[in-house]
Image (cartoon, rainbow, N blue to C red; front, top):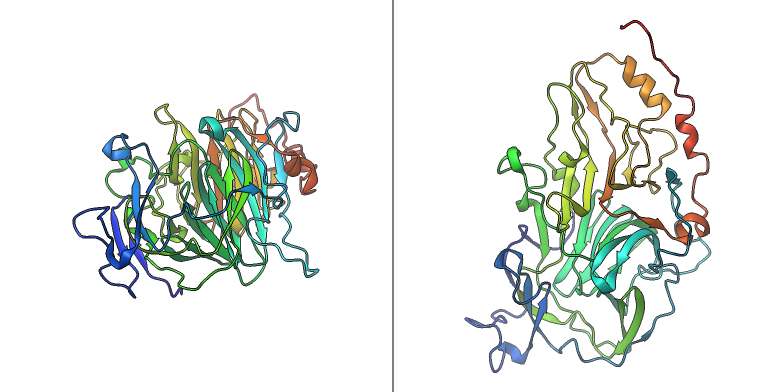
Length: 439
């Protein structure tokens, strides 16, 4: 159980003060001539000033020093595989599967969260604010005297192994496997770990993650707003020497030094915040009659595009649930899709491919690339007795789904040496069962 406190809700306007300094929020205005405790007022905007009220997000921060107090940024030489070059490899339309990505080597080398970032695939351009990238992180060392922020977009972080202790300008949160967190664009944070840690990151350039519309489901269901948690205000009151601020800007990394921590926010109020969510709290919607529902019913968060009902990226999970459909092939059906599907496995075994798809690994089924259950899954589900059964017990698989066509990086296709060249074989033994006479 984390020792940290949280504020409950999604899309709410929060107010928070470090409990050590009560009444540190100005009363009745955002920028008084002199702030309480002589703090500096600084607004962090996540949308244009004139965005519609329903889309307008910003937070006022009351801090010991403004963020502008730093030396000039210089190129950052670490994280050499954290680069968004979508043209370095020829296109590859094949079904792709990665074995579990490596944890840091056990040779005493220290790798922190930023140094352990590796880009697998993506599309678009952060300069035009359109697109996404998918990354893997693998680290064994804490960011003790540094912080990171992303000028290009939002991070949705999915831990697979190891608990992340994340300090943000807004406060602290602990994020364990089977939980996720979102760090919106521009928010500074540092990741501490106490053991080798690995996970997945979905980065979106276009906008911010929101809850999907529920339509005929009604007012309640899927990920409920009350279950999202935002950290309460907390600041670091220790002096820092040569503190490093690492910035991702237009796909490249830069670093600036300063002699104070970025985590000096004593109080804040607004609706542009980092947050976490426990995937076990997802309310599953499923068929109770026949047929396998589309995976959209498992959407936790979405980053919409300008086309209605079409996402830059959806974050979808496949949680434990009951399967009761009659006269139905219950696993996911064979399909070709106008969306790109990147899947990861947090724990357990995925129901459609229990062999070969391991926790800490991934698959990519690109736009219109056919895929579906392997031979073992097809044969078993085609002949199974259709009784109510628990599906995916002890398992948590997820999908990053996008309307964009994703290009794989050289690291993802070659350097990591985790691509499974034999993946296509899982469908080769499927037989032609066509019969002239109907069963």
